[in-house]
Amino acid sequence: MIELLILYIILNREFTMYGIQKGIENEFSPYTRPSFGALKPALRRLEFNGFISTRKMMSDGGKLSVYYSITKSGEKELKRLISEKLSDNPLQFAANARIKLCLAELLDKEAKKNLFFEIKSLAMKFKTDAEKILNDEYTKKNFYQKIILDNTMCEYKNLITIIEGFEKDNERNS
Image 1: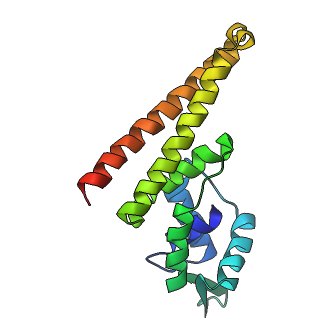
Image 2: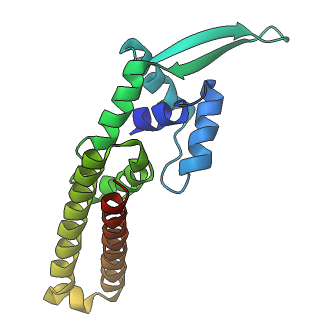
């Protein structure tokens, strides 16, 4: 997911690693906050694969700054990463689905349709899983777990409702 965020942030403008971190933080802090320790290897991988290029420049104070920009193949990779299959791990799914939905406008109509279908299907599966556990005899006696599961089901219901709105918008605007 870090590569996706980096490519998105540098899509329209080059940034230093610090600028990339701040850009991700400014736009995606409710979902993720990557550290420099996560950014640096991701930037290396992206450069190695030809998805980004670097430009080095000395500042007036004599400090070397490295600026990162996206390449044409990086733009294709960004769209591929947005469309890439999501994890079926509910913990990873929640944040990653929200990030991908935020970036869905970069996709064409068919890719959006596929993304919305995948996210909606997984959200419905996770909601059903939560309902099954909520209806279990042991869970009915566990007040705290019951409250948390109820909240989880509400979150999935809300996500499904949002996606249904996106699906209608996608059909209307294409």
